[in-house]
Amino acid sequence: MNDKVPLTVRGAEKMRAELNELKTVQRPKVIQAIAEAREHGDLKENAEYHAAREQQGFIEARIKDLEGKLSNAQIIDVTQLDAGGKIVFGATVDVVDVETDEEFTYQIVGEDEADIKQGLISVTSPIARALIGKRVDDVADVKTPKGNRELEILDVRYE
Image (cartoon, rainbow, N blue to C red; front, side, top):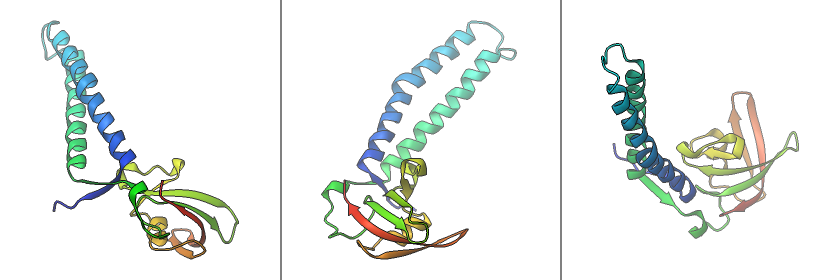
């Protein structure tokens, strides 16, 4: 199963930056720490050595994870989309909760980019699934664990 995973341009750039940091800064640093710990003698009793090896394992696993995600990414440049006002992956949407009059701004992003505190919601989330395909003035019925919410769409942007 080698399905493409949608990713915004910004999300891909953040992943590439993290990958570069891991390869050019973190990996050499942990290799140096392992070399220094080896010089301290008996490896069985050497806590620094074991900690550095464990850290190396985490770094290598994260590098592999990021490389895999980037190789399977379908990078979508939201600014190049012509969705005709429809809500699609990457769109930024202003909504108002019909019941509470609270306004929210969400951008629909890939799962690895989601951060609700920054208004970045996963394309697989209940809110995103309810919004996709809708237009300004439509009302999306969102099924949440706390019951249904109605969100009226105020604006759709591709930025």
